[in-house]
Amino acid sequence: MGEERMSSNVGFRSPEEWERLAKERLEQGPFEYIQSGSGAEETLEANLAGLRNWKIVPRVLRDVSTLDVQSTIIGVQSNLPVALAPVGFQTIIHPEGELAAARAAAAKGIPYTVSTVSSYSMEQIAEVMGKGARFFQLYWPNDDEIALSFVKRAEKSGYSAILITVDTPLLGLREQDKQNQYFPLKNGHGLGNYESDPVFRTKANLETKEKSEVISEVASRLFNPTLTWEKVRWLRTQTKLPIVIKGIVHPDDARLAVENGIDGVVVSNHGGRQLDGSISSMDALEDMVKAVKGDIPIIFDGGIRRGVDIVKALALGADSVLIGRLYAYALIDGQVGVEKAITQLKDEFQTALALTGETKLIDLKKTMLLKR
Ligand SMILES: Cc1cc2nc3c(=O)[nH]c(=O)nc-3n(C[C@H](O)[C@H](O)[C@H](O)COP(=O)(O)O)c2cc1C
Ligand SMILES: O=C(O)C(=O)c1ccccc1
Image 1 (cartoon, protein in one colour):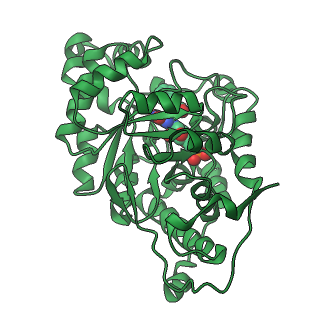
Image 2 (spheres, rainbow, N blue to C red):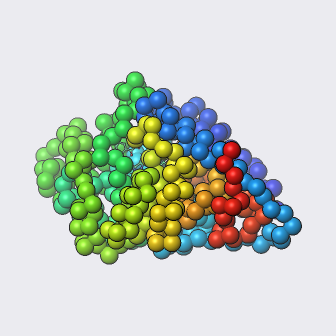
């Protein structure tokens, strides 16, 4: 680790520096779209504070010379207990968008999650990833045939799991975006999966439509406020892929996920972008762990910025984490930027693990944390 560490200091950028650079290089609309949360941004801030308020009580003299951070995330191998979260519209950050971020994930050996509103199609992204592990995130449209079409395409193009995002029956109110009058879909981003979908194309009569009409057709189908567990159970019968529910913080919902045959949960409040005033991810994690630990994998997201945050989330019982904004900002430098951010996070995580006095992920326990 020593030599690699010295050389990787060239061009070092902290998470705050990536954010600062993104702010400098992007227009206000796109930058604030990424950065902001909903409402008064209490939950956005709470995610960071929730992590900050847990402190590690490290142990010493335990031979931490050899570390093992290899992980399995929903059945796929990963070089870290980390996957890239679904982040829509990545061409607002860099012209290569999802292609660049997905290549970086594949090169670094961690899974990439393709958003329903990716600017490139899931097939295009799969192609650049080769054997790289990938998940598909489903925003269940208000049309089940389109939903099923997305899932079948994901099966065919080598995706290993479907993450259904359930905290978005409708979009949270983001004040910055309203002030900026900015919404990426309106500018033609995030159409990759819809424009290429045969079922949607037929239903929306796409051959005869202008871009602005295509955008309206997508916008009118994108979210589905009628969704219930019944539909999830139906999808369970339609695919052999593991199904993960993303965006729950209530232990009763975690139990329902298990009872409905779901293969994993993502404890998440959408990075503070949906219900402002909802519990921070880290505060939710404890009870979620009590509810389903050992039954199904628990993935955590919200506020992960440094390696030590991963140590805390795993110690509290998460099996792995997703990162969102951390890599989204680094995408201003394309594939190279995202690779750099992942390398840095790995270095930080290994350092934090060793300095905590541990060498293996399974040894991270709640007893090494104190809430302050
Ligand atoms: C710009 C942006 C776009 C996002 N798009 C999606 C999306 O398309 N689907 C989804 O399930 N979550 C989406 N999310 C939420 C992330 O998957 C993740 O839950 C969140 O970013 C985690 O918090 P963090 O940014 O603090 O790491 C988005 C988040 C951001 C910041
Ligand atoms: O910005 C988001 O968080 C997000 O997930 C989304 C997805 C589709 C349309 C608008 C926002």
